[in-house]
Length: 260
Image (cartoon, rainbow, N blue to C red; front, side, top):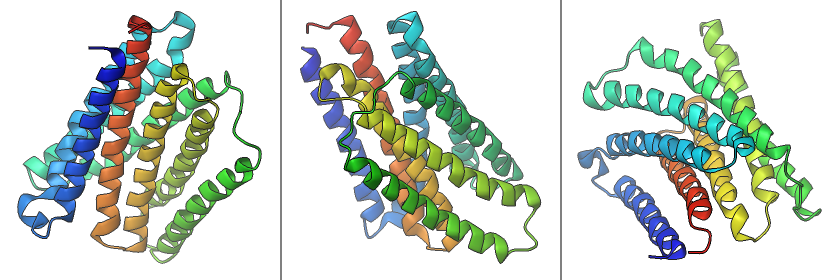
């Protein structure tokens, strides 16, 4: 089977998985099939798969190009670890524990590593997006960030009893998400239409979806918008992991079999 056919089939399988979860969440009786729990278990599997494929891609590229791949792999390993613990307590044991709050620091560390990886990649890329789109891209990303940050300020100001560490994290996470969104958009927009750039374009989209997932989850908690945004966050997270997996696999496939 040629590389292009494999890429199409893997991409089709990824889309089918996302559609399946979307249908599960949208089903009238979704509460009976525990759609959120299924999504969390899918997230665990997808996060570990993305982590493995990132390290596999790193082993296939040249020594000088491995740093961004390895950094993203390390970030996904931390995220996958946190996702596994969360799924264990929420899905298997059906309880919330203070340990889950401590996992915020694991996620924050993973986001810092992700930002570092994107900076390393962005430094080597020319920014080729159409000039008219540059300000529009910045305005769009900034508008999303500003809206979520406003909700964070609102809930923090109305909760004087909230612990100081929790308040700091509520401010830090949107800032980290904003930096990831900007850098991921920069990396995505810096590639042309050539085949060689497709892996990083898809990986950048995956990272962008993960950042959007965190913003949606933060907005759901801060604005009290109910289950809709929380479920969209789970869906976006899974989509991000799948996109990263596909992009990392495609990078390895291009280097292992460039003429297929």
